[in-house]
Length: 323
Image (cartoon, rainbow, N blue to C red; front, side, top):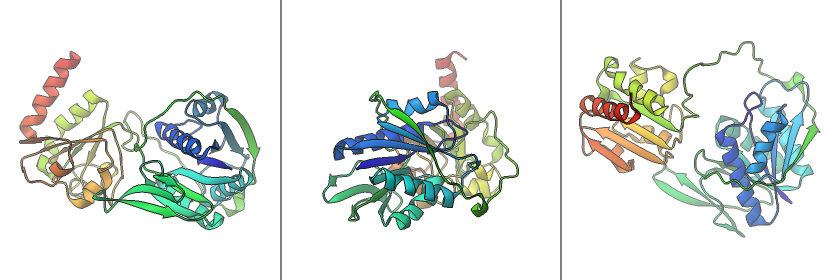
């Protein structure tokens, strides 16, 4: 019996999300008195793999095949399901990102396993197996009872603290079959964004809404982001108006993010927007409307005109940083 943690790698590198997954899986394995096995697909250097052991993985498996050049949900499902059976995995843990959302339902069908998606905590109990998650855009909580022998969990990003345990983990390569003929997607060109923090990777996000009044007023938001090493974001009306690129749109119909710190500036806090940012650890709201819904979701709030508040905030940070 084991807990199998699928850890995505990006060009052979792991991110904080990867270590969060292993930390969660290791604690779950401890609860179950079993082993935590980390699995990644594609070539990864040993030094990078060793990092997974620091967060509690007792064994690290690397699925390799010369044909693996890009993500393919069908082939990945076959590989993960096969290794789950070999390792007698009773719980599979994946991220609740786009990759995890593509794989988890397929694995659920393949392994006849119950699925708990977007969980936020360790199970409340193992018998019965009860997992906790936010529902209704974060306005309520639910405990989900999974009754199947094999369980699949997808973990919400930034919902579990990293926990280093310093395990003496073993690393093993596993040769797997890869059906290139069945791959439906072909990557013909890759364009990488340079010199800008990716919104989904950022620990701090500075986001603006229609309360900024025009795109010409965005300067202080960009300045604040540069001072804090943050990513910039916006609400849907802002991207629809063309004030900011659509790639910065956060919310139910945009990017779902969970940074440590989220600034909502001139954003009223509609349900659709909060659905994309409610998992942030801390929300700071700046708005002229004291009754704006965003204040109910925020831990800190400033009732005031962003055009006046932001320059003072930027000035204070510049002074603090000696700039």
